[in-house]
Length: 453
Image 1 (tube, rainbow, N blue to C red):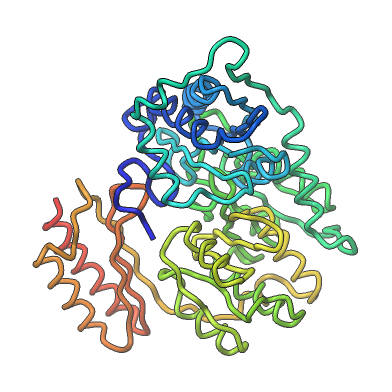
Image 2 (image 1 turned 180 degrees about the horizontal axis):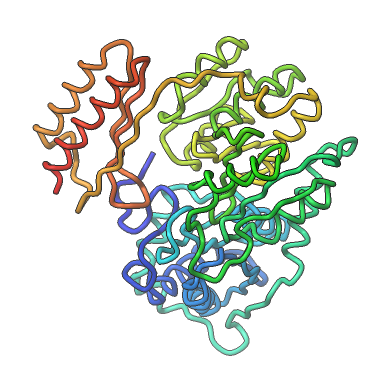
């Protein structure tokens, strides 16, 4: 669960408008220094991997955080633009002490973010992020700066992309190939822009690339996982078999079938869960989702003889639940899907490869596989807020939420939560009656919006 003592870190690292607090070079330097201080134990040289997406502000934050790392006597390995899961993979495979990702994922280009991985490729727990945050202004850190030959160095790892591509291809069944498949691959002008087309192309697919010309300002702009309509149009125009769209940092994927119909993370998990159950690969017959996972996924899994375990929103909390319970499949509706047998975090490319393997194994198109579950109508409204006020202590807000829940009754579900990365209040309603859930969500959004602004 989220540690309330943290001021900078949200559910996925530190985020904000680039060059505005807390996304400044000064804060990045402090974060790099504090991270290096935390991981610097034991003899020998220590190393931290640093990668980023394609945002213009990546240079500013990259050099600042590397300066902080080196100032503590720790070496930095620079990867350049690489998907978040690729950075996690390199961190683990290089046996580095930690990894740094400079990315704001699906946010627009003017935003940026910083998140950390431990040496084993998993995101840092809340408690360690809290410790890093406290150390940023601790005089103790300032007093132990090394000098002379003890200062850290920075090295560029030129073959990082090739290493990650080799790993991804190794996860695809050796007896299979993608020959004969035509795939639209939308990289959102982000971190997957070179990796993804190469992976699918080298496995034999005919790739129609989209969003592969980043200029620092066009990341996620009307393309990628947050705007799959562009990809869907191209799929129908080229009569492709399917479309695959990634977000800016490549840890999530949204797909479309040959008719341009969306296949989100819930459907991907349902398809893969059924395949894994048939092959007796789904541990404890359980999939870990979140409180946002569609009720249809829960119903579909139950029909297969499996169950859905719900975790708080955020792929890090999904992974925590998976590790705690010994499960190997989990994810979010937004397209973060985690296969713990092969990776430590959401990986859009790997997820797409897993789904393509199911298509080939069953010799069925994506449209047919996607019928594995029926989605229940959901309405999601984002309310912009000035600050994250505690809704439990705000009586009118609490009463409005209770009234909405009563209106939905047994045939619906309500979730009200703050975004961990933006100043947004997210209101989600779900149920059998699409008109009712839409009206309930709109009324509640209007009431809470007036109370919080």
